[in-house]
Amino acid sequence: MILSLIVSIGAPIALGLLLVRMAWQPRLAARTVLLQLTLACALGIGISSCTFFLYMAWREPQGPRLASVEPTLFLCIVAAFLAFRRTRRSLLAPEGRDPGSPSGFPDSRNSIPKPLLVGFWAVLACAVAGLILCSINRPHGAMDAYSIWNMRARFMFRGHELWTRIFYPLMSHADYPLLLPSSIARLWTYMGSDTQRVPQALAALFTFATVAALSSSLAVLHSTRRGVEAALFLLATASFVRLGGDQYADIPLGFFILSTVILLGLSDSMAAADKSRGLLSLGGTMAGFAAWTKNEGILFVLAVTVALIATTVIRGGVGNTARKVGPFLIGLLPILLVLLYFKVRYAPPNDVFGSLDLGTYVAKLRDLHRYRVIGEAFCKELFGWGNGLIAVFGLYLVVTGISLNRRCATTLLIATMALALVVAGYFFTYVFSPHDLNWHLTNSLDRLLLQLWPTFLFVVFLAIRPLPRLAR
Amino acid sequence: MKSSKLRFYLPFLIVLLFGLYANVDIVKMELRRSHRPGILPEIAYEARLAPLKKYLPRDAIVGYVTDRDLVGQRAGYFFLTQYNLPPIMVLWGKTYPYVIGDYYGLDNPNKSETADLVPVKDFGAGTELYRGTRQ
Image 1: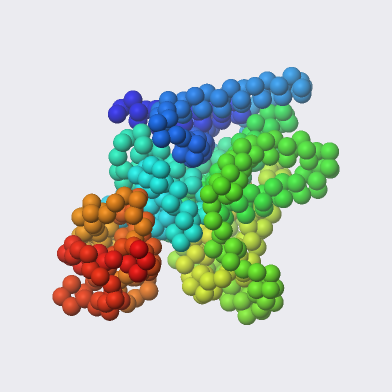
Image 2 (image 1 turned 135 degrees about the vertical axis):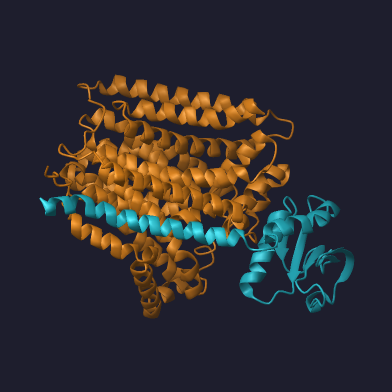
């Protein structure tokens, strides 16, 4: 039992850490260690969910057990990564050594007064308590958790040869990708029982990993102070902690979207182009995991790829595009292949786009009333965001002021473009929605925007002016 | 000097106070919820459906009808039933070999939807199994 737990949790994290360390070897500091660990955990969870899905898809009734198949697969991944790295090195012959760590603003203020730091820990403790209480009050999560994610995990764990029943078209959201169900079912398989502690722990991990990734990445790229403030804004978003405790997949999706942008930011801040390629590849892999978590992630993959291509063409010319976009696509490709296999082999048509014909699309596209209803809903959601948090955010920005950090200008451009494209995509998804429009908006818009909120915070805080020097 | 100190502390204080307020509010709300009497529907349904799960073959596909009126409640309890029975598959309607009748009004359940079906077994607590319209 203990050995299988170590294998089930430790092996993917070790694999993730190895891949992150291969791509990025910064100077050891609390912020870089925290960021690497956070990215490693998510990478490990993502990879192991893919391997578990493939194991379920290809296994024979009397075939080998997961515990004997998975370590072999992990070793193959490491070998493939090493071989790719060696081939690339011999082909490219790097010109010089990279310091390995972006330094952030040269005049960044990293110190936080002790009383303020105590305040931050108090907020974090309250958020942890809130999430634990959510898990006690709703051990199986809220409706989306038990009607989609946990139920699919139960089919994967309990179903044996019947696990493909989750793809029956009459089941709820049968076409949704499997990162979460697969991760939960994988851990249940190792533990031998479908305890609720597993989805609860995964939900808590993704919730606080998002906070950790946001704060530590800003601490690396900007300043610790801004990292902590951004984390406070995220924790102050009541729906973020609550949806985390309710085991919704929007939180892991938000994490993978944020991680993609963070990795693009880190690669942007690297002096030597050769060093940034590994980070770009990892960014592509994280974007792939976003698509492997929820269908909205597929829209993000398209948006971030378009934004990456457009930005590199604008800033570096066509010649530079292949050098930037290539590694990103190489990292993305394996996860997209798994997703493609899932979509082609198992997933039924999507409930929003699968049931419409061209005539209906055109009619909905020309219906101006739909635009007005959707526009109003977006405005209402934005102005009421976080029970007044948006007003606090506005006040905060007025006090601090915004100036563009030129060092990360490319990342800011890519991320802003990607976020704008995703929001536009969400808007038109509602335009084409076959469901009752008001019902669809009421039941999903807040969660869709919450997926983008951590990345939006990252972008804004990256652009914020460094603190003034405190007079003594 | 006062102004620079203000700019140093004020942004942090603004977000800190709001963060505390939002999270204490969640804790207070969840504490109130945890003191509510009664068993959680998820837990209650697990126990309620356990005998039915034992009775049905694991590869069964069963229909589902309920006497609950509200759309949100109907969906919620349907999903709870579906969630508690894997790998048995539960789908809306009566056109399946078996149909689960999930009744809310224990004293006087509204069984109009299953009036045309042949009862197979009453599991108590508002759960009944019927033969469906398709064998």
